Amino acid sequence: MGAILVAQQPLSVRAWDAILSPLLKSSIHHTLAELAPLLLGVREPDEPIRILHQSFHDFLIDRTEPESSALHRYLVDTKRENIRVALHCVETLNEDLCRLDGLGLIQKLPEKVELSPIPPETLAEHFRYACWHVQLTRWVEVCVRGWKDTSVYLRSLNGLS
Image (cartoon, rainbow, N blue to C red; front, side, top):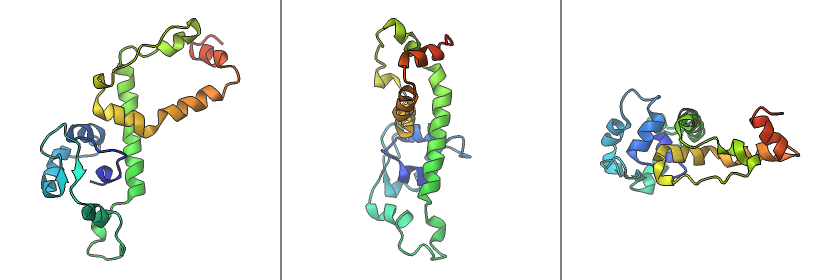
């Protein structure tokens, strides 16, 4: 539940199951079924899960008295949950990037090959979220801007330097 509360955008049961399945002993659907009165989108696998009322979010995250022993067990550690989701997003990318058809065109950029678009609907929801959540564009920018001569960098990717 903590991962859903800290998510950057609402995801479906199917996407959360793909991201969190290595951590869970059973399908996320079983956990969410018990919380269905407090959530929207639990019954449909492709419907984004949304918290029905802000008070539920506040109860789990923004509690003013977290020292209360009776309620402390329900408190969600947002920092830990963000780290956990980010880790599983990186694992998702490691597994799914190698299976994505048509990648590797960037290695041919010195030949000025046009990069064909990848239609978003061909990518699984959890994969799109992982790409967005981990902010790979910033990583790529650092890689490219870290080289004075981009062509040297691209040749190094090809093993030509």
